[in-house]
Image (tube, rainbow, N blue to C red; front, side, top):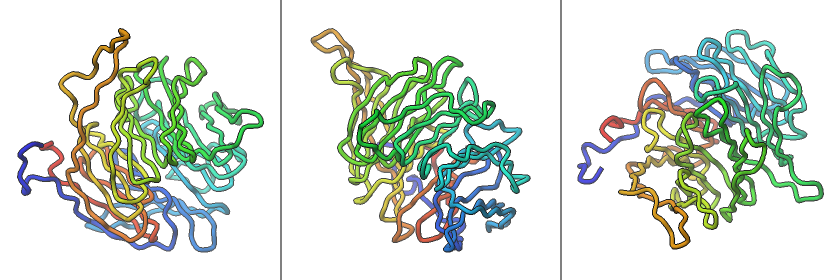
Length: 360
């Protein structure tokens, strides 16, 4: 990006702006389609799944379901392209899987997956990542559960607070390291700044740290490769980018810390077509587009003989404010580079186009 003139900088352009009668908690593209889903809650505190089609520069409502409890989060990550089933978590602690063509009843559900609200969800093994299809959920009850939709009722792995310990609210979860059928990790972030990396194959915590502020979002740059980079976003208007290739026995993983948004950084989403480009979502209603550049060498040997990771640099490519309310959700389209959808807490959903990403 060095020397790139202003005319060649990526631009963030609003394509569709739609006001809805519900608080939007999550938005996701339906894989390999011009459709997206919205999860949220109307004023009467029920829950809605809405499916929209992009038609001639507008988003048209194609299907809708209302349930007694509000939906909080959703993912397609566990599902095959043939099925494109949506997994959701709701305010009552239920995890369910839905066929968007027949929305009336879930095809799989665990009513008491968590004892209270499911804050976050991620999927793996379907669209991206080797191994079994799995869903991970994190809740206010402090638990992180991993589910195999082929096995009903009981999680295949659980990370729960120790007995007698203070229960920390789990705000974010992400799969990673799924480059073979035998490898997979879950990263979980908590309200007190704790970050824990669970090795699912070994059944233990591989690494943990504290970023000294509530963790709003965690995401690997790609979940279907050996761990490469991890971005952690926080309440304190900063994010951390970790190099996950090199682990030092004393210092752990090396990271850089970057100020962003001048408000809470709600989430980070990596561009599917280029894992070194990512968007962060701000509590001030803004989006910021970033690019990471690797250093000339990614590790150095310390005096103790151990390798330590070396960080490169991040560059802010573009930023734009869309609302006075937080950007609660954001999703890139995996087929059309630069096409994205975002939901704000002002009861709006927007379809955006980021230009010139192929030049980065």
